[in-house]
Image (cartoon, rainbow, N blue to C red; front, side, top):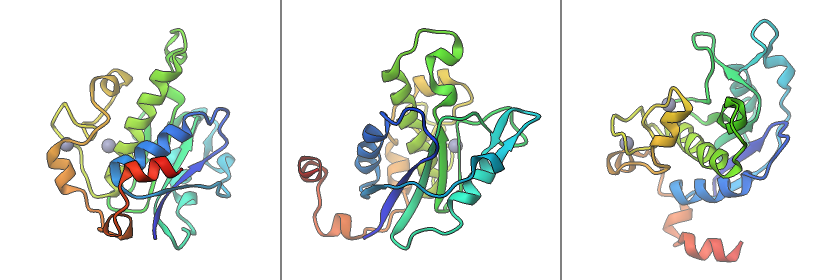
Length: 193
Ligand SMILES: [Zn+2]
Ligand SMILES: [Zn+2]
């Protein structure tokens, strides 16, 4: 049995982890496991940018993956960057094991608006599925009605749905493992949990 590990990293608010786990299962049909890893955020901090290098965080996340980890998703709330961009909402290894996503720029309050936690959760679910989609081999999709459509600004995230389009669904590289082959429909799972 392999899992998508959901790894909270120094989160101030972890209320969106539960909907996140549910939605990740619903999308990829792989069970999730929430677990903290030893991650030293300070090592990824860039004092000149006052931001965290997401690639360095990813590297720490995947350094010793648990044997039953199909994917590892780090969830953060600090401001992430990669050197060629001013910021990123998240980062992932294409066809790899690791991905990371941050809620930092997904809050209304970040843009001087009244906070709306529902909207933040929606945005985080989309970005988490988007980054995990990359780890399952998906590249950016030109369909505006697809979560794999790339988002430069938070408005782009709001405009796209949380779901994969039919073509991306088809291109998902998921091993049909025991989660599905043993007959483990989501409805049953969600009732049992
Ligand atoms: Zn992307
Ligand atoms: Zn698509």
